Length: 493
Image (cartoon, rainbow, N blue to C red; front, top):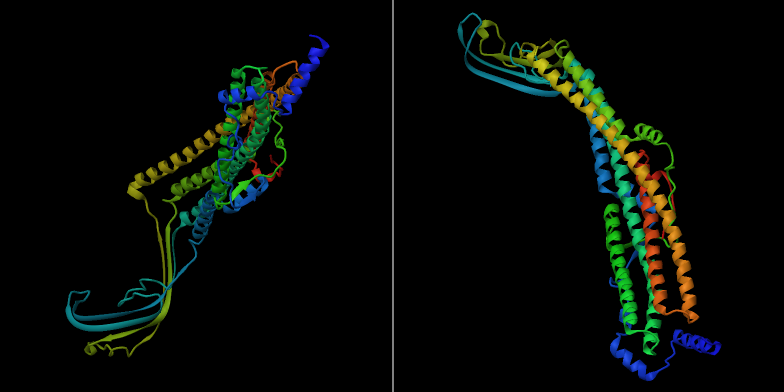
């Protein structure tokens, strides 16, 4: 090619990229073959803009979840219930107080202790501490009463204390998992918004290539098939951009659900680059990480407390035949009455009302079903304790698996980030070189289109790799028993 010919071709390509019409006849012909990119084609906003938006970062999302997530609130109420049951168990040896009155009326015959039938009309009235007394009986419902098995009074508060510990650490475990779900949902929203922004950049770049290829075809410098291919690539990118808007809206709605927020207020993440979370050293020795998890995971403490509660229940059943059921009652009040048997020296009604006190102490030892019932209950409690031991062993094995798996995922994701970063750098250099060749007239826009398509794909792969690495870091952090709110990171997009 001569220097003059090369200069002429370069000037022709420059005029094409400046959107100058070089051939009116060819323009009319190509319009019949290729659909033009209208303003509607360039539009990628398929979901109406929300009337209200709320910018939220990861730290704010985690704090809102701690205060407003119903699942976490439910777990804390379970802890409050266990605390109330502990207070009740500790109060077994505290006396019950009763005050009242009772009135007794008898009319008709009675049989005496030696068998004589007598016609007696009698009345009595008691008023004071306790109630229910007739004749020579003691106070049926004492004013001050302690009624409990000695073994239950000692062991049940210990059982309840272990139950409080178990429920509290179960609540911590639920908090960690719920906050992990919130962080995962937040990262999904970040990824969707970043994916959309990257696709819009790629859409603009490929849109320029598509227009240039159409102009080349219009002036006879390229095939119609190449222009159609460029058009198809543009539409595919536009479709992905539209889908990313749907993904962002769905992710915002899911995050609003987890945070118990009004879904009509659209959640958006702060603008800016996505930063990699370096929360745990994924190159650390796996045995050291497992030991750390066994020490800090709330599930381990909860299972250990359940074993302690089951052990106390077993001891209670073993001591039950040897410890008594205790009943202690004390009452004081005014009691009076009379009958129609003045012939026996009984005074008239209520002429002899005076004060009285009663003290009753019972201690009852019970062997259930000749001891077979006690042995049965001891077997039940022993099985419950052994079940708790095996549940703890299962939890430890699961924690070991989770830590090893999450560490492996974090390592793999970091390697993927490095590879995709190199891939993006190579794709950017290739796209720049193809654009220079196209502008210099040494290649057609279609070749630059291939590079732009690879560049768009590399951007998406790097974005996915960084988000998945952050997810792996968060999951490893929670697998080690750390609450996600213990760190603060400006993860954005």
